[in-house]
Length: 266
Image (cartoon, rainbow, N blue to C red; front, side, top):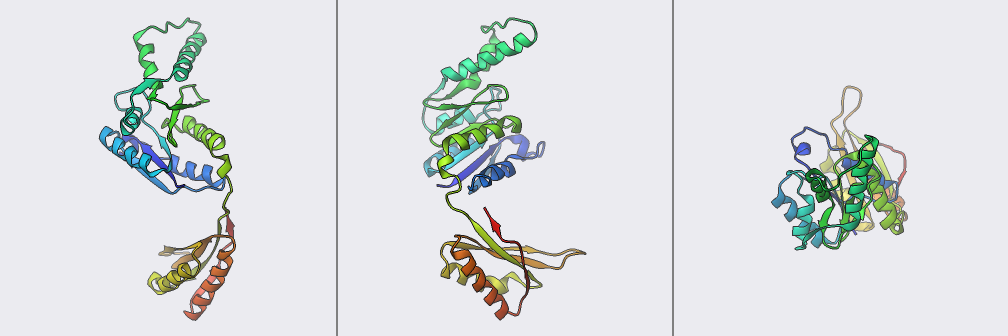
């Protein structure tokens, strides 16, 4: 089961706001022994959001989506999720009550009594309109719920709301997947060598050890650091040490200069 992240919003693509969701989601998953498999950024374009969701619903992946679930003209995600599933969009009864609670809370703070029949308050109820059959995701910040349907989990774009909501999703729906497959990693820094020289070694390691992946992270160096490649293996607990030894033997045959890096476990 792959895990994906869709980040919606023109403000991200235009540079008005810097995305912070991807790094946070990676951290939330890593703390639970899971990992992110893919990410997509999409502007506030209804057709593009819909087509992306059609593809992700068909994939069977677990998908988190941030942004676009408000009630202003540039918020399209709720409608697009319904369109992608060919479902009607309806007012969720629990989401409606939570929105009304929020309206009354704000009025109470001002020493007023809320009139839930006013046009602006009726408009706020649109934030509780989700595809038919969706479940709500509680929002501890202001009670305005997100929603989930078919292993897709939709939360606001605001980190202060989105992040605790995503944590709730993980801990409520996916605790059975936590720390199922420990990922081990061992690597070395190889100095003054081209990636093309070590590529045959990398290919051979993946052929010999099917439960590991080989990675190569080159650095052009700096005034204080020599040009190098971080070359390593990651994956299965049993195969990583064996592949690592084989990798070192290959580097020695190439007469490469290298130093080990700390062993990593996730």
